[in-house]
Length: 448
Image 1 (cartoon, rainbow, N blue to C red):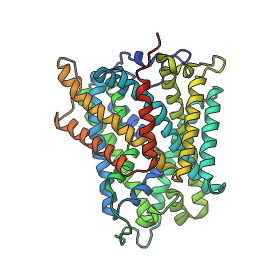
Image 2: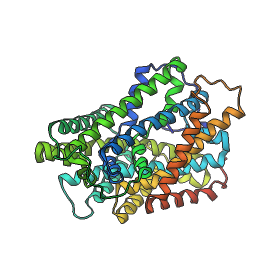
Image 3: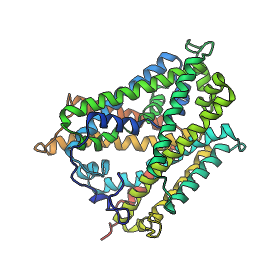
Image 4: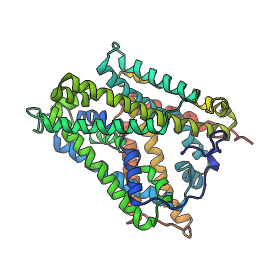
C-alpha cells in the first residue's frame, strides 16, 4: 500500500482509492520497475540458490525461469491495476472479490509478516556485510540487525527521515556495488569456476525458486504503474518486457560473476558472497569497500520499507478499533509513532526468531514466503473471478492469452506456496501461525 497523501491525517486503508492520470512514458515505467525490483537481495540469495542446485546450468535456468514467471505475474497484476486503479492494491482486489474479512487478513499479514519480515531480512543483509568489516562475536549479524531496526525506527519517530537526495545516494550505492561485483567476476576466476563440480547435495528446485522469485519481488508494483501509463494497451507490455528483461539480464550477469569468481561450491559456502568475491580478486581492501557499500545500501532499503509499512499500519489502526494503538500520530515530529513502535516491536521479535534458528536472512525469507504466495494466489483467482463477475468493466489493459496466463500464474503461486511450506524451516511455520492469529481478529468490529 502506498504512503497516504496527507502526512498528518492519512486516509483509512479502505478509502485510499483516487483517480490517477496517465502521465508516465515507457521509459518512466521501466525505470520505476527496475528501481523497485533490484534490491539488496541479489547480494544474499545467490548463496541460497546455489545451496539447492548442483550445476551452473541449473542455476542459470532458475534465474531465467524467475524472469519469465515474474513477467507472467506482472501482466496479471497490470490488468488488475488498470481496471481497478486504487492505491490499496491487493487489499482492494481482495476486498472487492472476497470481502472485507479476507482483505483485513491481508492487512494483518502485511503488518505482522510481509512488511516486518522484509525489514528484518534487509537488516540481516546489513548485519552480514557489517560483520565483514567489524565482527561482534557469534551473533554479530543479529546485533547489527537489531541496531539498524532500533536506529531507523527511532529516527522516524523523531521525524528525521533522510532527504530525497540521501535516498538517491543510497540507491546509487546499490548500483555501484553491483558494478563492482561484475568487474570482480570479469577480472578473476576460480580454477573450476564454471565447470560442473561433483554433486554434494540433492537438487531442490522448488526451494531454489522461492529464493529466486523473492529476489525478483516487486513486479506486482505493475498494479500501480499501469493506471498511470500513457496508452496503456500499447506501452504496458513494452514496459514489462523491457523492465523485467533488463532485470533478468542484470541478475544473470551478477550470478555469472559470482560463479566465475568463486565457483558453485564457493558461492554455496559463502557467508557474504559479494565480499568474498571482491576479497579474492581485489584483496581485503576491495572486500571492505564492497561490504560498506552494500551495508549502506541495505540501510536505505530498510528505511523505505519501514516508512511504507508504518503508514499502512497507521491506516489499519484507523480502520479497526482493536488496533487503535497503531493510529497514534505525533504532531510535534509529524510521525506515526504508534505504528512505528508497533512495527519495531514485531521486528525485534523477528530478529530473535532469526537468531534462534541461526539462519538470519534465510529464516526471514521462509517466514514471509508462504504468506506472500498465498495472497498472490488469491490475487490471481481475483483476476479470473472479476473478469467473470464484472464483464462490462472497462479494462484498458487485458492480460494476453487469457485464461492461460492467469492460470499459469495461479499454478506458479500454488507450487511456490507448497514449496515454501514443504521445504523450508521453522520460520515458515511461525509465519503461518501468525497469519492464523489474524483469522479470529477479522471478525472483530471495525471502527465507527
